[in-house]
Length: 262
Image (cartoon, rainbow, N blue to C red):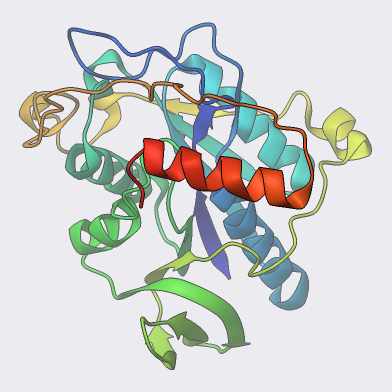
């Protein structure tokens, strides 16, 4: 079983600044971590490998500092890692991101199963996985709750629909996106960290792709543009009241009238 897991480095804090010109997050100097949903995807692949054998490759797109999440994946048990890194990839929307990663997957060669987290915490679109599958022209299933069975030529999964749970048998090669808690992610191993600290991380840039048309990547390849993005304002007010039950009820009722909630 040849598996590819898509992982991403995301800000480790909600206190992130925004570039006023491009409208994208300023990631330099910000503490980062692996996207939480990707931990569930990686754990799913590792469990399948332990049961059926095979190889787990991880692929990420981002600046050179994104190598940190690939190293973390190595510490958890991933076999190979690839980083798609090029300034021409910067500022990509979900469509350009999906196309870029799909080209990276093509560069990796043969695979049976691609596993993605449901979404990322910095974008929350849940679109990249399915769009990748469309570019790769392979079947895909989103919102996977459970791996029911691993077969020789397909995988059986439970898919979370709005009002039902559906069981789907999907042929290889295919792509799935998994929900959180599908499997409890393991902790990185210090022993594995020592064993993999010198393991190679392949770096691929635009010149390595078969399709080198710059108009399909980064800002050039993004049909959607952010008009305005800004951090939420914090305007909470807090009051502490003392008194017995009757007095507090009166104060609450008065405050609700003052705020015109009633």
